Length: 402
Ligand code: NAD
Ligand code: MG
Image (cartoon, rainbow, N blue to C red; front, top):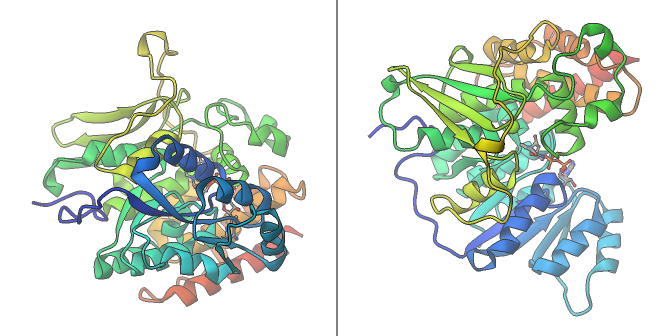
């Protein structure tokens, strides 16, 4: 039997409960939601490891509640603070530094890794989990944007499998399950809320502040992805993510703006049938699905009530006003390393915008310039070359912004 789900082979092994879980980025928005799912179903999981960047206080609270044997943070200052905050009598191993996240991802005894670090920093840990043959619940879309080919190859070699946490890709996964034969699939349709500036004009966009851009109408998320939602770069990264997950060219992944965020994405088959996934916009649904698959678990939250829901509307995205979507599609079509430049320039530009150093409309300008400068790397280059290209683009984008 063929499957559309290139990273979920039909022969994937069963994973018994309780599952031994490592959460990379547990102190972030996805990490906190994941631990709330775990807290609702404690019999299904053993929390083996938690990691945070610099937020020692939140990591200490989480560690005290779930008592994992291993914790990891980004630097010595965070490690020292963390040690001081842990309850007496509890002495987990504390790992420090960027490579610690790769060690946690590949840890013996862990069978399920939730990859929820933000940005390119999630790439090497995700690759490490893939090489180590883990089941990966993947929130960190940037790792597929950077090195989707390497991660796919590592999964194939090790037997690792990826379950998408990103709500659209999780919706697609659910609508693809049980369907045979690549020839039946016509296209994937990713829905997009349109972000906080949906329907606004160029003059409005020119003057928006970080505070306005951070205010997403439907989802509560970390700062970086909230800005990506406002520029539509989030949808651009998600088109690339879908191409890697489901083995398709960009021409077969479309985007539909759906401001109510109730239909999370659709799969269209050759007979014209479109299968959609609907639900309230709450990341605990796709997180629970990916952590427990194939089992479904009850979640304490309001249910979707279509009789009392707003009218559902759909429209084509405005790619002129929001050029980031088109830039991402062009980058994926250009070469396998252009998405590295796209992502790195975007991370720098978002950071500069959040710090008030550039304007909202400078974000796509800086990314477009970075793509124009980027020379494609050889097709079979490794992770080190991709990381170098990422670093080069960051340096050049910072210089271009001055
Ligand atoms: P966030 O900013 O809230 O949290 C990020 C986490 O990563 C934190 O634990 C932080 O401490 C850690 N971190 C940051 N920099 C790090 C570094 N250099 N090294 C190690 N750890 C580091 O982000 P988020 O909104 O939870 O998003 C996480 C990932 O999930 C992103 O890739 C995002 O695109 C994806 N995602 C998020 C949502 C959402 O609703 N938040 C939805 C879909 C996908
Ligand atoms: Mg998404």
